[in-house]
Amino acid sequence: MKPAHPSLALLMAIGLVTSQPAAWAHGERHDQVKVLQEQLPTNAPGKKAVMLTVSYAPGEASPAHQHPGAVMAYVLEGAVVSKLNDEQEKTYKAGQYWYEAPGTVHSVSRNASASQPAKLLVWSLVDQGKPVTEPLK
Image 1: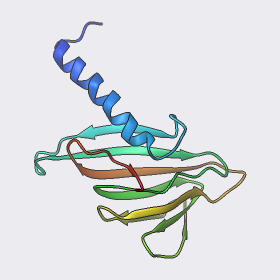
Image 2: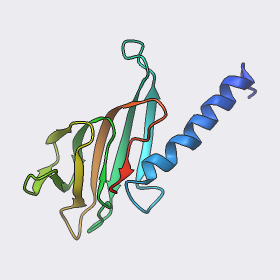
Image 3: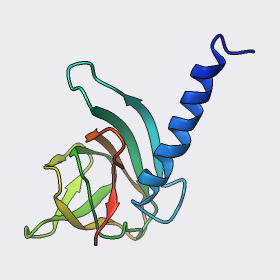
Image 4: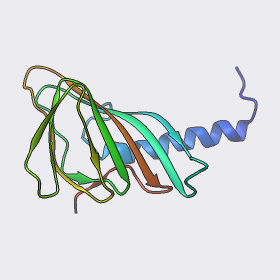
């Protein structure tokens, strides 16, 4: 099937390719993060809304990182241990959620189980051209 607008198809492909490396900063496995959608909200000029999932294999963790934009995370399955800024580590189970203000240091993000997978649904509002996740400097 041929796309109606070749330039639109090209822009969509470039958007998918350029969004993946930023999401991959969340972990080493390229299949750990799956971008579900990206939108440019008309009521937030210069911003990009991104919805994605982060899947953790048993015992898997993400390296320390931060998000330049606001983040809302919801545990879809399993349990995840998270540490934000100077707070204590907290375990979130399926059905629980948290918010991260822009620039929050996320020093711990890992599957709480050594035998069961875990999965997060993440929504972020970030400046256009910025990645969703940046490695901690």
